[in-house]
Image 1 (cartoon, helix red, strand yellow):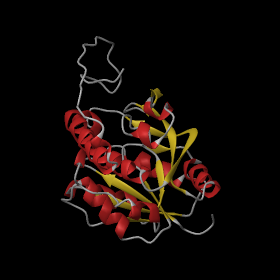
Image 2 (spheres, rainbow, N blue to C red; image 1 turned 45 degrees about the vertical axis):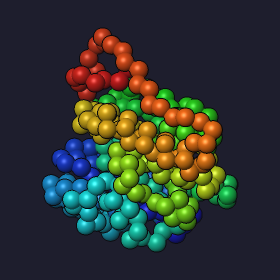
Image 3 (tube, one colour; image 1 turned 90 degrees about the vertical axis):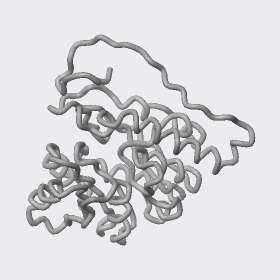
Length: 260
């Protein structure tokens, strides 16, 4: 694709210590037809985002200070008319061919409204921790109810994104899972087997800092999906959390809460 058709939303939080690396991986994409919308969630993040853009005409900073992340992403997406949409977390990085591979997958599957890839987990210093385990699972709309395998790198067709209702704040700590569930109900989804994304795990990452809130939010999104699909007439639902103790060497990103 030669024209600028892909909008990349970049949520920016707090001190945004990894934003420069995220934007460097964006600028290194072999597919060059993208525009980025940085969505700062507080005033400090806005100042950092403005400096990071550094006059790059392909990047703009949205007026999203004070918004919840889902609302900020929805605001950013609404302001752009690109055919495709992607979210790059400001903690994370892309492989150079990430956009090209996912857009080729969508071109080869015209009925699909979303394509996603495998990913690897990295620590604060960029060292690999292993593959993202859920993205190894086979995708199906039913399997998605129980395991969030469709992420974190996803490219949406904007029309499918709109048909699914876009980002909403009903389950703020699981807005991406909620959106993927709704997308799975209105469009086909393609799983690309390559690892095209590095998901950075560190103590301030939302999935670490708001671990408990994320569990509750994902359960809420799951319950809503069960009801939308009419499965509540046949099945009961419950949230089951296993508890276990782990003793392991400290990881480089440090401290309690390391992922095994």
